[in-house]
Amino acid sequence: MVSAPADAQALSGEAAGQVTGVRVSSTPDRARLIVDLSRTTEFAIATLADPERIAIDVRMGGVNVPDLPEVAGEGLVRGFEISQLDVDRVRTLLSLSGPAQVQQAYVLDAVADQPARLVVDIIPDTPAAFATRAAAHLAASQAVLAAETGPEPVLALGEPSTEPGAAVPVAVPSSDVRPLVIIDPGHGGIDNGATAPSGVHEKAIVLGYAKQLRDLLVDSGRFDVALTREDDIYLRLEERVAIARQNKADLFISLHADSFQQPEIRGASVYTRDERATDVLDRVLAESENKRDIIAGFAMPEMTPQVVDILVDLMRREMRRQSYVAAQAIVHQLEPSVTLRRFPVRQADFFVLQAPDVPSVLVELGFLSNADDIQNLLTDGWRDRVVDALARGIAHYFDELETGADATVASQQR
Image 1: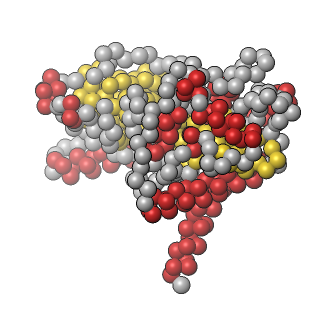
Image 2: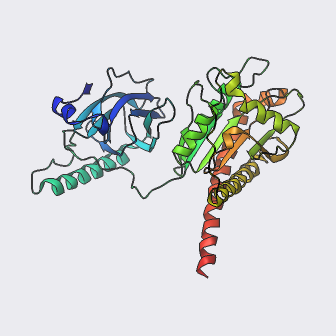
Image 3: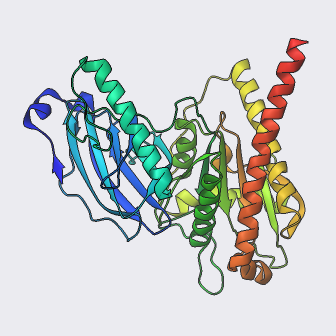
């Protein structure tokens, strides 16, 4: 259902923002809501009981969604609808097949031809926890209504309101800020990346690893995670960097599985950016990746020269330092699990690592030109070990940052 009252439409304008698209994918273990927005905005989430639902409100002045698609897949979410509740509030209401909870929710800035988006991930919940959360959200809603309207009658417990004007409390306190990790599955769309003799493409392999890593990091409850692409689409290199920068990512990690003319070269490695490559192979790999856009039929736009001052230089140095710390943490966790290249922490001038304000690393999972690496990359057990190690490395990196920050504060207080 898509509805927008005529009076609300008249009061709202393009400046107030619009919801331009809504889609839901669902499995028994996980569901995802994506709301396309004409601009970034605030949102709030509430759990509703009898029947089991989750309401997601965004501060928007209109709905411009001609036709709602069906839920993609079957599982936690069995249906959804969208409606405009007020002149500046649009609600998406998810009908659940059983108890569920929001695992993470975040807004991504618009990048190139991609609009701003609200992403909400949903996982199963216990009946008791769901009921407790629904009651708490209803009580919070009643408190807001009482404060706004005075001593007016409010709904009794167990009667959640979906009427216009009903407040929806934010499910996660705003103080609960988690690091944002952006995972970049290399290549995609018309750019297949490297190709194994069997015909399997690098773009498909790294997307599978990226999704599994995302799920593991999200399940830890410690991170917000986003992918630069979630399906087989083409993104220019500068678009990938822009996604990390515009969303102020705390770590950007790009996944690849390249090939080289010497089939004996194998093993995983982690790169940070440096204009001077570690060796000939690193220069070849970097140049190959950086030219993908042109090979795929897209010319790289000229970069506007930035005014380089002392602050920018210090910022770049700090990002390189943090990137190196991240690379070391990841390699330390990969080392006991998989075969690594000699000197696994390496440097190369990969374009995708150029963000001056986001710590960035590129992980070469292995080589599609080596038979042993190919077998590993396509084996579920090996992928599980690699993804587990990557997740541990990312966690250890943020642990080190926190420890370093605490040490700095302590030294300043002495």
